Image (cartoon, rainbow, N blue to C red; front, side):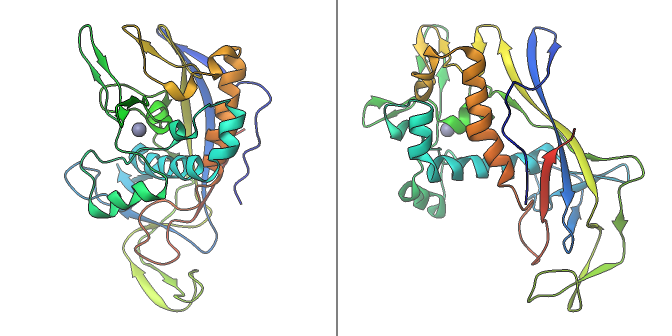
Length: 281
Ligand SMILES: [Zn+2]
């Protein structure tokens, strides 16, 4: 249902101080027959299940909510398309493109992910003169592609995830209730969902940013810190022109993952959180 086409050239860039930042304006539409729950104020101390928070009476999709869904889709893509990505990105060892388990101390359920194509949680230690990159069976494997994009403990990623806001006057909050049909999962006769919801058809906008250049770090290229290569999965792509490498990552990883986002938030109620994502042209 989502339809972001592959890009023939890089998106527009903006200079932000010393950074060159690529801009991908996005539009998230709440699907017909669905809705988004609105939770309380975002807080790192409460469990965040709702995909939308109310800020000054206005609904917003916080970056953390979008990031969770986006990150998950990148993980799934790296597993499902590993063969294809391996040849397109000219990666010699397929194991280098596995996503890592997001938690440093994984739960039992997360441990199971190791059998589903994940690798252990990435961690990088950068000290004055020494950089320690992730290893597996004593073999350096570097940071995983997910951490390259979204950041890892000790090292920033290249993506800047925005909050999404509704256009002025376009946000619609239903304070009463929406009826959800449990069979079809759509708004119809059936159970009543109480609380505040964002109605179908509501459009949220935000700009996904990619840091194309920050000092010696370039998006699409492996980073080197203190003489140590950190992103071993991008070793081969380094021989390509920068723009070509950047387009490859955008078209082969970012856009397909964005297109696969169909739901935001935990699926507490059936039919909740269905969205579509498009470029905001
Ligand atoms: Zn990782």
